[in-house]
Each structure stands twice: as structure tokens, then as C-alpha cells.
Length: 241
Ligand SMILES: [Zn+2]
Image 1 (cartoon, rainbow, N blue to C red):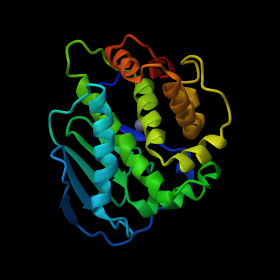
Image 2 (image 1 turned 180 degrees about the vertical axis):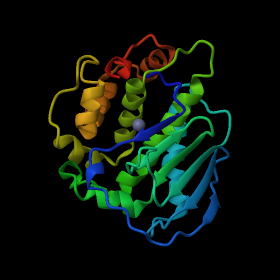
Image 3 (image 1 turned 90 degrees about the horizontal axis):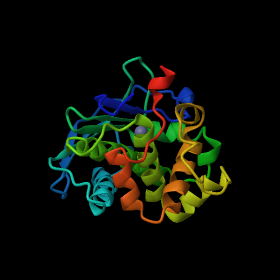
Image 4 (image 1 turned 120 degrees about the vertical axis):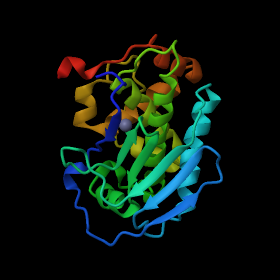
């Protein structure tokens, strides 16, 4: 599957444990101070200040901008109570390239999920939630780069590699260390571990591998440019479909 697919969903390994509540919805909109962001809160945020969505989203945009991947229009980050895949599966995040919008489930729902994951036992839940925002915003920024004529279509696995690597980079060092400790290993020497099966079997292990690999690269921006241009090739799940 090439990256031209319009909508991408985050399917964390703790999804099977998801139980969504039926709490009342509240509608509020809050403008972010960033000129590139619009924050749209359409869910109970359980004490998670709406402005806090700006911080991880802006961080993700800045990280990509630092490597020359700027966005050209305002991105909407929407928080929703019940976020689902078209097939009905609950998801924690979703990125829609057509509308240049990302959606994340509410903090309380993500918290419910994280409590079931042993690898996340020592990860601060607010930090984890912010990192999900980072993941989805990275997807959105990557997508927009594909408008450039020099950029090839990007495999979904490549997009997940970048999104997960930055998601873990965004975590506080102690939380990231606790997550990485659940998957002890040296940085991967090549892109072999980044394939569809590995992603499906254990997204958190995939994330740890992505972070370790990207951090081991001498020039991360150059490596990202090669990913986006298609010079660095990842597995593609066309071959699995
Ligand atoms: Zn993703």
C-alpha cells in the first residue's frame, strides 16, 4: 500500500482490550497559539488541558520543519470520544490527508488501554497521550511532502517508522527509557525489522526499533529526506494483501 491512501489509522497493540465508555460529549474549540494548528476538542479530556494538545502537535511540526518538511496550510487536531476504523475497530489515532486533519481518542480512553500494556507500565500516561498526538501529526506532515514532484509515494511502513520514531523521541527521557527497557536490544543495523508482520504483531516493539534505528543514523534529516524521496526503500504491505 502506497502512502496515497487517504486515511491512516493507528492500531496499537493494546486495542483488543479497549472498552469505550458512553460518557457525555462536550463540544469546545480552542485556538492554538501556533498559526499552523487548530485544536478541536470534541470529547471529555479528563483534566487534560486543551491547550496541552498544542505542545506535542507544535513539537512534531517543528521537528519536521527542522529537516525541511514544512507544512503549507493549517492542520486541525481533533479530539473525539469514540474513534473507530471503518471496520468498527476502536483506534487511538487517525490521520486524514484529504482534510489535513488528525484525530485522537480522548485521554481517558487511551489511559484505559495503556493500563493493559506491560511495556507501558512505567510510562507516564499524559506523556504517552501527547506522544500519540505527535505520531498522528508526523503522519500528516509526511503526507503533505508527497505533493512535491520530486517525492515518490511512500510506503505505509516507512510512514510508521518515522511516526513511531518521533513518537518515542517526544517522550521524556525517563519514560522513553522505561519503554525501551521492555524491548532490550541494540539498534537495528538495517531496515529488516520494519515490515508489516512486525508492525501488526507488536507495534510497541516496532516503535522501539524505529526509534533506536533513527537515532543511530548519523544525519537524521538526510535519512528522512531519502525516505520521503523514495531513495531509502521500506517494506510495502502491497505484497501482503
Ligand atoms: Zn501511524
